[in-house]
Image (tube, rainbow, N blue to C red; front, side, top):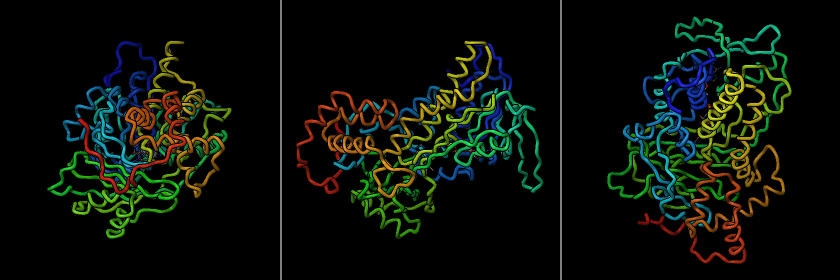
Length: 476
Ligand SMILES: Cc1cc2nc3c(=O)[nH]c(=O)nc-3n(C[C@H](O)[C@H](O)[C@H](O)COP(=O)(O)OP(=O)(O)OC[C@H]3O[C@@H](n4cnc5c(N)ncnc54)[C@H](O)[C@@H]3O)c2cc1C
């Protein structure tokens, strides 16, 4: 797949419309351009000229880790993007070798994991993807253009387009209908699809919300001139349920550090200067505070608390309008601490592409069975959802359900796995693969891991408390 129009296959679809021009919308539009003559992205924001945080994506102030699977998908959809980002100052990162992570049982070893992504600000990454999409001749981007409703045929059985409102700086907004053969809602957590479906006489989807009440506080720093650390990303993990606080420092394309603090169970990190630094002092390793204490702040401190896992069960509906699908956070938003959202948006786009290709092979039509898509999407979301909510259930204060016996058992098993990480590179590689969505969680239940866990069951930890040991240097 390339980011140029696909000229090999016949193009039978005429016009697809994507609501929302953030990561899920951009990636959906990219794959739709292989199946439709024209793709229109609508976004209510006015897009900035460069890599800037915009109103519709306020989370862009905070660290956005791009998982390894996410990097692979971006490179697949936009060949050469890796090199372009790196040329733009983005730092390539080999997990384990270039990162230092303190887990509950100690520092993860430094080793060549072979798992690569990069550290980049969210605004820069989205801007780079936006540029690629904007250069695609089949895609047109309409900003300051808010979707306010779905258009349908008279029987309300098929979606035929979108009603939009153009936001004018003069205040004189105007409305227009835009016809389309397929409409994709990628408008994020605040998606209005539930209310639109209701107004068309369809059921409203059930919603599952599992909230560990995590908050973020983020600030950019200029690293001290004498900084000589051999890492590009430091991650001090929380230790639920006892210590709900964690933090990440990562070098971004400007050479600045993005420093994001996280506090779950309503232990929100503060946005006042002194309190922000005090919070840093309380993480599981003093090295976090020691690292940034002499760094120069270069931005305000931004807070964010809308982090619940939120799943809209479109797959459970029995009636669904034709020519319409929902993707990205609009279907499933994750607690962001696990870094899955952009990667899942990429997986959603690949699924959309697969469904359209299958249909084209069946009858040469650029159509999609919307409900079948939502059902397949729900399956594909299962792994990341269980990973995020399962971890969140470690906090007794998490709302939205209680951990079942299997989740509690998985916690105990994963505790044993995590205990082994500081001493087992192979296990670390597997652990990275699972958390970076390059392998399913079942990989952590293969015989090699089961045996290691069994050996560890009766062993007592003899290592000094990890918080007191310095982070390991790079191997080799
Ligand atoms: C604090 C925080 C940290 C995060 N960290 C990570 C991370 O480390 N790694 C990671 O992969 N993900 C992370 N995420 C998740 C990530 O931001 C999202 O999953 C990702 O942006 C995909 O979301 P989306 O495109 O579906 O929706 P959004 O990014 O929310 O975008 C929705 C878009 O739709 C537009 N829109 C909304 N309504 C309308 C309308 N009616 N008409 C037209 N346009 C509309 C908005 O302007 C916006 O552009 C984080 C999220 C948060 C909150």
